[in-house]
Length: 112
Length: 112
Image (cartoon, rainbow over all chains, first blue to last red; front, side, top):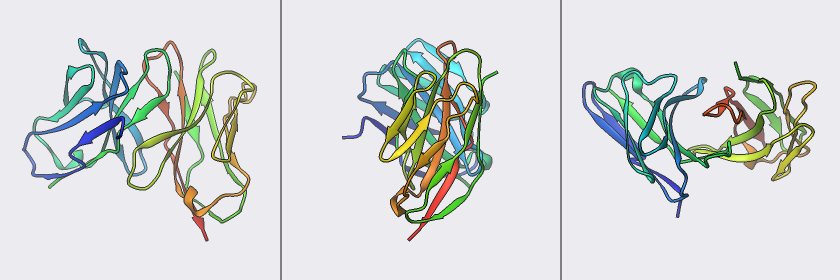
């Protein structure tokens, strides 16, 4: 079984709808991250969390919110989706004192 | 601040050709350096890493050496295969920072 899972894997939604992307991990890591990937732009950090009570904004947090429900679960919400939020979204985890991150398979989101 | 610059793609090679993907970084002190690979339709996977100067990371026939004097971490493989077709990301992590800095990615395509 995968260590980092994301649901849904694909989602098409309409402008103005609220949508939640979910991430779960079995690696026992404290740190979790949400990234957005657009063609030719690499990865951009949306939010990150170092534990259940610690949430931090990344470089592109506007229009997004997150919830860390437990050590193993970190959700990303788009309160009112817009077309330029169409992208591939990745969740990742890492150990406390080690740099390498472990990524989920991604969610492809299309906002029409 | 910390940053990573990697060669732009796409890079197209024939099978069994020699591969180099250039990566240079800007950082204070001694960051850890990584190469991640993203196969089509998947999340990023850690390919190799190096944590101090002159370290050589290696995995699956790929190698990269941490060069402090040239602030570089170039990825090399002696004989590429079609299955190596993917997007490759160079990344940097500093213990004083809270997140990894990714390069923009280099798309590699291998012709049979």
